[in-house]
Each structure stands twice: as C-alpha cells, then as structure tokens.
Image (cartoon, rainbow, N blue to C red; front, side, top):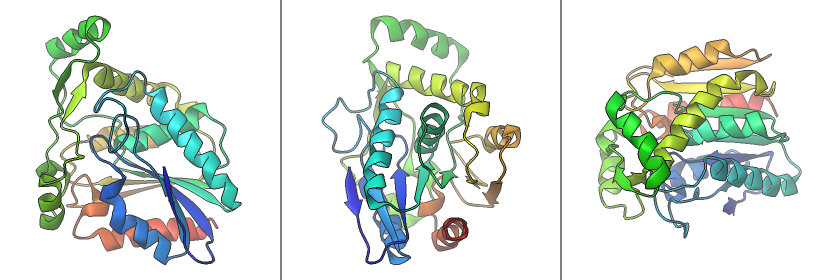
Length: 258
C-alpha cells in the first residue's frame, strides 16, 4: 500500500484496481485526484502487481476485503472524508467490503463493476472448475482478458503490451471465489450501507455485462444512488480517450459530498 499526498487536502480517495492489473496503471488518475486536493491511498491486491503472493491466485475473496479494510484504516489517519473507488473486480471487492465491514465511508464510486461476465464460461467448464477447486485449486489457466477488450486508447494498449506486472493466468480457486463473490453481491444486497453511491458503467463494455450491473443497481434501496452510462466507452472508462470527462463527473460526485 502507498499514499500520495497533496497540499491542503480536502478528502481521501482509496482506489482498488481490477483483475490482472496493479496500482502502476493508475498513475494518471492518481495525479488527477491530487490536482483537485485529494490524498490517494492504493496498493496491489494479493496475488497481483508487486505482492509476493503467488500471482493470479487467492485462497479466498476475503483477502481482497481485508486488504481494503486495512487501506481504510490507514486513510482514517488523515481525519478527512474518505471515498472508495473500485474498478471492475475492484468494484466488486468494494461492494463486498461495504456489505461485510462497518467502515466510515462518505461515498463510493464503482467503475464498470464486475457483477456479471460478458462471456460466460461454458457449463461443462464451470462444473469442471468446481471439481478442480477441491483437488487442484492452484492450477492456472488463461484469464482471457486482452487490452483490446479493455480500452480504445492506443497509448494504454501499447503500454500494457510491455507490462511485465500484468497477470495473464489465474487459478481455479480465484475463478471460483470470483463467482461466489458475484453471487454474494446480489444475495447480500440489503447489507450495503446507506452511503452515496455512483456507478459509472461503460456503454460498450466487452468484459462486463452492463445489463447485470444495471439490474444490481436497480435493486438497491439507498437514499442516494446515481447510475451513469458512458456511451461508446470500453470497460476501462478511466483509460479511455474521454477519460477527462469521466474524471470530471467522478470529481463532481465527491465535491458534492464533502
């Protein structure tokens, strides 16, 4: 975990990256938040980036939840309003953290949250993974994510092609824990605390099924919730050519609640 500070901060953003990636891919967004007076707290999730754990593998999705809880406790040291921002699987991890932990959050932003995969795993492979999860949980297989599916930005695509920290394979256990976390995000929907929520969804998402994200959002009973779809944008809305507009929208959400 790292902290990026700014003079005279007005709040703290805790950012949670998605599957396969790492905190280094968020340099632009970190600096944008700092430029508008927000401290940033972020780290690599277990099994990803520079963590020493086996890459692409976790024992339980709770490892992500517990890690985010640590980051929130660290952010409390600033004695400032705290906001969570989670992208894709990081968005799912933020959801599960809020559903299972009592944390002093002023608001949450979800970027194309992983609540349903665009390309479903065939039924026979899904059944096979259940068996392998018991006998060979660390067995790795291709994640199937490509940068071409994630963003339209040529610059980001070129950078990712040479990123040695990018995880290309994930374990059977990781996959089963992901599916379980998605199911629990729906099952425990009433446990989501009544904090302001902004869900920003890519309109042309090639990775996450946006209709399922909208379904989850519509089932929420919160005092304040906003759903914003970005037409034509691919999955990584903060890496798209229009990312400055996306950031401005997210910033306005934070500004209103500080």
